[in-house]
Image: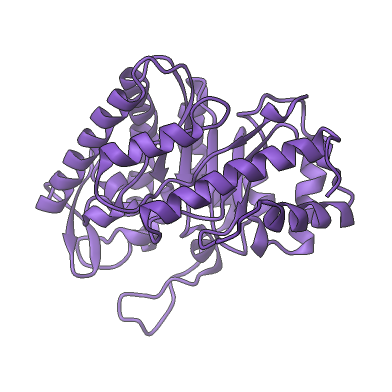
Length: 345
């Protein structure tokens, strides 16, 4: 394999409010040998945030924005309509930026557990507290996700779409760590088997249309054993947060994985901190390889692989986000050289 088997990409969010500038910046850095993506711009306000962006797009469900957050309602509120408008603009800018493009292209939606944890019922409690509401959200997302992928594919006909499901709320749902509406208690945890079934229900229709799916989490407690049971689901991780036991699970799964192409790798490695000011990727690649060596994971086992920043970049300036993205590209190149035996770090 060559170093082109290691691709770089971003998690999704980008600073600022200019969708055209963000799309062109991401395209210029990543299109070609890597994996460009549709930038999300939460700096524009409600409807551009992770939850609101997806909630506004849900099929058959309506939301509005209250002081407590996004809430299920009978008709879309003003902020939900604004969110749909932002997404429409983003897709138009995507089509313009990638006119004539042929290659992989990543788009993102909030995952079902994060939506259920964040969206409120009409009476104010989190939707995750109501099994019927959870089923409704999951069913809606199972319809929305393949439709969103199809919309993006129509905008960029030469693209192979990759879908990322962002799940910052997953571990809290499993741990029973979400506060009740009063703030004096915690909501009951969902069983692992239930979560597996709900995730599978969303992933299956997307995979069925030939689209790779990756679940991204910045949490230190990503439930790798559970996620391994969801067919065809890759997992994006912040490698700085992983413990030895999690690394061993990763090594075991990589050892047992069937040969795949570079868009169907079991793990995506978030090895570049979002606040990194490093001038050379060695600062992040060397610790990653050293951990792998300690657990018997040789660099060649990483081919093909995806390298990302640890999380989204919306808290940076555009220049800062550009620096981290370029550093991620350099880290992918260096990791590829190590995996090919071209470099000794």
